[in-house]
Image 1 (cartoon, rainbow, N blue to C red):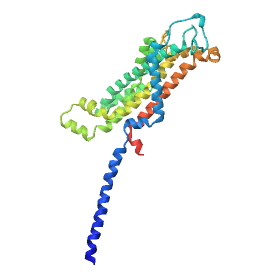
Image 2 (image 1 turned 120 degrees about the vertical axis):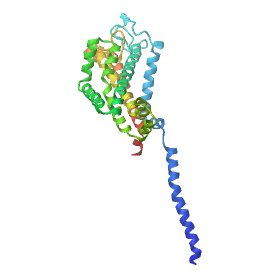
Image 3 (image 1 turned 45 degrees about the horizontal axis):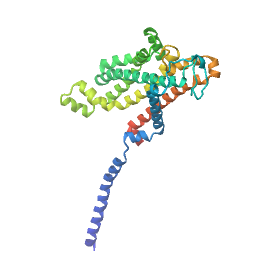
Image 4 (image 1 turned 90 degrees about the vertical axis):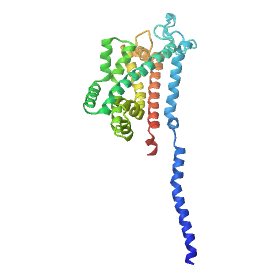
Length: 312
């Protein structure tokens, strides 16, 4: 009797062990199939998706402005300060210019200032932050102390001083913002490279004769690009706000060229604020929509590029 039961028990144990061993494999396959891509994670972020659509609309309006809008510099002294109508959808300004046309052309200036300024300080941050994080030592100390010095001064005050010395223009605004925005990028990249430089793939790259520049920019930088993309995206919003503040103060984009900031300059009068909202509400809304949309996109990119957030 006992001998007859032995094969049955053995076979049941074997089947149980095979089931236990197959379960992790099936689970791993299911996880790999269900693992969302970066694009899917970004698309599931509703605010980021809304921000992307809003930014796309603003960009399209800025691009097609020369094709569909009126000349933003044409004045009509017989149509000064006219409220919105069928002829002028957003009314006219102090010298009879179409507010809608100026608003669309101003989008080209404000968005381009944000993008170009961010490109400048991102490049500076990468050039300074990569050696600081890779080499460490005295190079790291010099770069970080320089970043501390730049961060210790009020950004807007320093930019006003730089623009005041160089003269107000759109180019000087881009350069001033770009020269003062790099410390955040440099610090982020330095922290990432400090944690990556001792990994096995770096040791393997050294063993096959890769140079320091190749290791930094070919192997380490691609693995640290996610936080840089997020910081640069959010930096565009800050650059747009700085440009608007400088143009409002008369130190940024100069008339007759339009930007959202210098369009708000006309709102300094109590009469305009109380009785002519079409002169300051549209540019104010454009700045708010652009900045909020960029921040939403930055939050979505942060969540999409960090897979660990989805396993907590």
